[in-house]
Length: 376
Image (cartoon, one colour):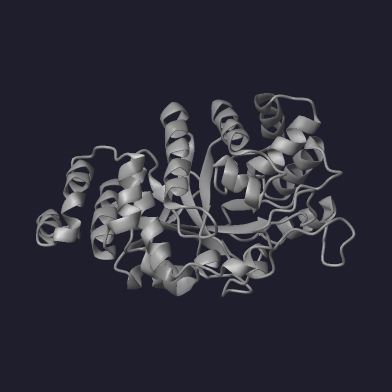
């Protein structure tokens, strides 16, 4: 458990960490840290210090609980009009490695889970040049017909921005249309890094950071909750990361609609930024901890295990993380195509609980809105 006196002693006995004492006092008093203070944490804070401070925030918000859910993914297509340099998933129309799921195929995939206690379907894919907002709605409808009581979390802000604009609707009108088809929430993908100069270098042709934020604000105003992400470990700086998180924190102050923040690690295989390599695990843990310390107004921090790997996900539970996603059942290819360790990502409930318990935490099955389904 968190020990305040141990943390203060740890700081006072290390000259190199004395500048961090003020930050520690702010966090221990429940006060918000600034962008500059987040950058300082990134640049000079020891991992042990970050772990203690991040876990103080985690325990204050979530006790000893670590959450997971029973879910599967639908990835309707990897055909995409955009060609982001970090993406290993994108294929152009007609590429032999591209796919397009029909509505019938999506319905049949969903029907496979009718006798399983799945609580969420996660739907995300490429931005198909020919699909419109009503086709997106029919995808949701196909799932809901098979699984009427399952929460559908569908379509990144990048997908939504394109089809809503194509329909000549404003964001709220477009999201209202999809909500009528059965949309329950939206995932956090497509945020990457908001800084325009970074975005121009890694994903210049798709929706801007402001548009991503505007789509999520519109969703929240329509009663549709969402998650938020960051893509880290490529060409961005610590300042870019901190400013990115500040924009999300500011929107959360305004709407309260974000359920969870999810740092996503850049993976280097099969994309145009592969020459950069990948950051080490120490940097992953540092990023989780600073994220947890920074977000005083988002309750949950997720380590997405197909991206991070099982062992490193366990480590992340000591750096502020309280959620490790779900069972997934080998239904996503996004990170496996980028070289993640789990090429067929699936975990049983027993394995998820084993990881959580081995880190000294209490496993809690949740629904998509973090209501408790079952304690383990």
